[in-house]
Amino acid sequence: MRAAIAAATLVVALVVGALVLAQGNGDATVEAGVYLADIRAAPYTEWAFEPNVPAGYYVGIEPHGMILRTFVNDVALQDIEGDATTFSDGAIIVKENHMPGDFDISGMEPPAPVEGFAGNLAALTFMVKIEGFNPEAGDWFWAKTGAEEGTFDAVGAAEGCIACHADAAGDDYVFNTGPGGM
Image (tube, rainbow, N blue to C red):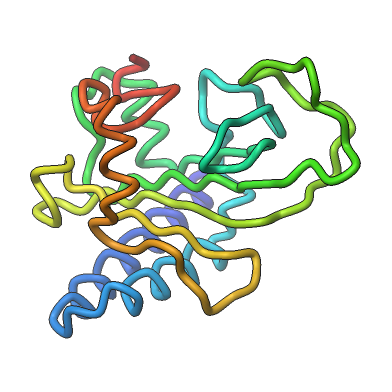
């Protein structure tokens, strides 16, 4: 367990370091690509599910997709389970955005668990807390990429992400589970 925590901490440190270097060129897409590569290499699917939503697949809402899975890294999980008032530098939240395809979720309300769903990934969205990145929006770096690698629909201080997440500003811009278990 300690080795896994140490490895996750190292990945976060490498990601943050790479992002700081990438910020010098002002290319948010490069920054998002660095994060995405490291998040997938971690791999994020071995992280904890976000507390306060069903573990595994659950009914979501737009713009993220009708079926979701949400993961948090160790930094975010410690902030949620502890008494933090904001998320710490290096906290990462990853949301898989799935389309239901032939799977019937009619009549199900968010965040009802979706049993027996095998996945139909449409996009991946993630938030990375970076001290000093964008204080007006909680210092979060947002990104949304399609299921295919190499394309981003939103990166950095993404206006659409910020506008929506402003509704959760009191929970450090995070829906479902804020810092300190809020």
